[in-house]
Amino acid sequence: MPGYHELRSIMEDIDNNFTKEFTLNDLAEKYALSISNLSGIIKRETGKTFTEHVAQRRIKKAEQLLRNEKYSVAEVGKMVGYNDYYYFTKWFKKLTGVTPSKYRSCRKEKFQ
Image (cartoon, rainbow, N blue to C red):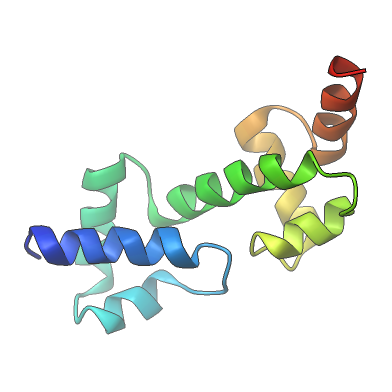
C-alpha cells in the first residue's frame, strides 16, 4: 500500500497527464504496483474506476474547450485525449447527458 506522498504523486500524475495516451498498466509500472492494487487505490481515493476518473477529468476539460468556437468538436476530443471522435462523444454524453455538439449549441443559445 503506497504512503500518502506516493498516493498524492499517483493522483497528480493522472491529473497532469489525463489528456495524453496512457493506461492503468503504464501507471502501475511507473509506481511498481500491480494493476489490481493500483486500481483499488484509485477506486478508494476517487470512488471511480481509473477509466471513469480519467474520463471525468477529460470531459470537464472538454466542457471548457467547447465554450471556444475556434475548435471543432473533433479537435476538442483530441485535445483532451480522445483520438476516436465516437468514443469521445459516447463518454461526453454519458457524463453530461448531451452530445458535445448539443452542449455547445445549448451554451451558445443560453448566452445570446
